[in-house]
Amino acid sequence: MQRSRLALRTCKRALSTTAQPAQSASYQPPVQPGTLPAYDHALAYIQQDRDHKLAQLEELKKRQADQAQLDKLEIEAWSNDPETRWRAKNGHADFSKPVYRHLAERAWRKDGDLAILMQRVTQMHVTPDLLPEIKPAADVRLAVGGSTIEPGVFTKPADTREAFDVSVQVYHSEERLYTLLVIDPDVPDEFNQTFTTFAHLLIPNVPLSATSSSPLALSSLPSTLSYVPPHPQKGTPYHRYTVLLLEQPSQLNLSAEQAPAREGFSVRDFVKEHGLACRGVSFFRQVWDKDVSGIYTDVLNRPEPRYGRPPKMDMYAGRPPKYEVV
Image 1 (cartoon, helix red, strand yellow):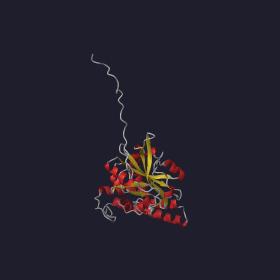
Image 2 (cartoon, helix red, strand yellow):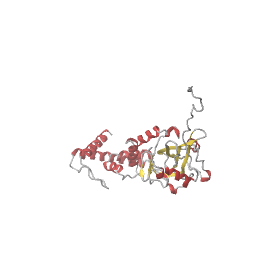
Image 3 (spheres, helix red, strand yellow):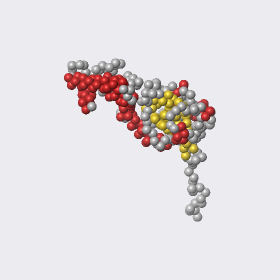
Image 4 (cartoon, one colour):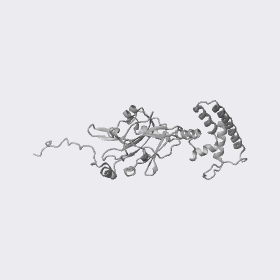
């Protein structure tokens, strides 16, 4: 293992000190054979190590070893291969193969994307406002107005009047079922002088595997709660429109007739009732602008509420003057 790491470092060093070819649709070795002896030796060792592990893999297959053990050995055999790493980095990965799933998940977890997501989820109190804890195992990305956005950024209500795109990358090869929920935890509850929730979209039984296409074809999936565009109320602070990906233990029977109420939708109760586990999250923020009025008129068909702080009382109104001119 130590020699394999040394060979990989040698290859990386060669990559950093050698002029790189222009972006290509096919892999081109960064160093031609015979140019750099240390690089040639490193490649030879990586290939020798790979051949040894592939021979072990064939033996384990004959013994009908556990699939997790087979996947681990295949990942070890191919993860140091320069072409495999190039394909993983440049969008040519085959997610039916465990090595590409492994490299993609490792990049998501270690290269900063997951850290930025969780920093904003924590900093902007998505946890614990919606769920006490979220430990993502799937990469959920949102595209608003045709552009992929960073978690927590501000978007315009006009850009989400039609459903935005949701892309999901899971890292398991087998197909599992998920529920997709879009929820706003910042709806004013005037009677209780607090905030409540509003469910904008609820789609159960979404089949996902590592090879599922993205963005998800949400319009073709039967929804329990159809899409209602975000409509942050006038006079309120920003709203956190949050997408949750909830893994199901089995098929859920949630028809439109059995739909829960949108207003006051409790994510905690819903997760507990159906035995769900939150595997992915992302969100964006919005504040009121004039386009929200059109959503209330054209989509929601109801009067637009307006909120604000109550006027301050004049504590001196009606009091006689302290001094009078005699």
